Each structure stands twice: as C-alpha cells, then as structure tokens.
Length: 134
Image (cartoon, rainbow, N blue to C red; front, side):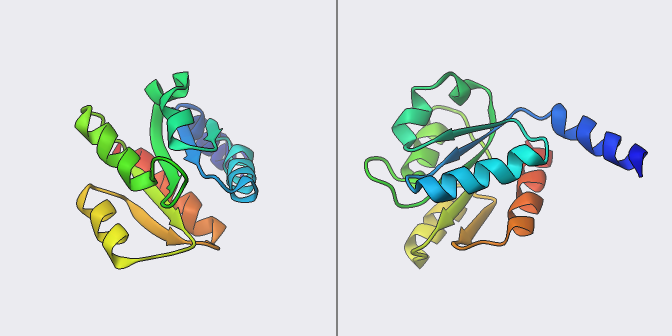
C-alpha cells in the first residue's frame, strides 16, 4: 500500500500546474481543495484575464475553466491560447450546458465538458487523463 501511495505521489509531484478558472468562489475553492489534497500543484483564478496576467499562465499543464464568466469566457480563453500556439488541455465546467458552446470547445480540443455539480472522481480522472496527454 505504501509503495502504491508513494508511486502516485511521485507521479503527481512531477506534474506542472493545474489552473482553475471560475467566477464562483465556492466552486473555485472546492475544486482547488480537492486537487490540492491529491497532490496536484494548483493555481486558481476568478477570471480568464487574471489567469493570463499571472506567472502560472506559463507553467500551466492543464486548465479547468468555467464556460460562462464576466469578461472573457472559458471558450474564448481556450481559443486565444490556441491562437498563441499554446494548445493546453482544457476541461470545461458549466452550470448552463448548451450545445453550441460544447461543440465549439470540443472542436478546439477540449478534453471534457462537465456539468455542475460534477462528480469529484470524474474530475480527478479527467485531470489525470489531460496531464497524461500533455
């Protein structure tokens, strides 16, 4: 058991930052806490603009983003990063799933499009999948 735990921690500790972007402080805090407890390096932001202005934007290996936010949406952030040559794995969270946003995000390479409230284990598995691809 200890060997499996150490092996898991070693894998997680070598991962770069998972950035969470959500304008809902409760979702942002809960998601950050969940991933941090599992050993992920996590940064959190209340807006896409705050993420872009941060030093973590350069070290992020995976983005978890709300779709609808004031200012730049999560999908617009994804498209901007792709336009800059930074095709990061994106996992989208939304309380308002609509097919147009889902299709736009998936066409740009999104890993997943999860509806709030989402299952914690599903998010963890999706983050691990995204980091394995990156």
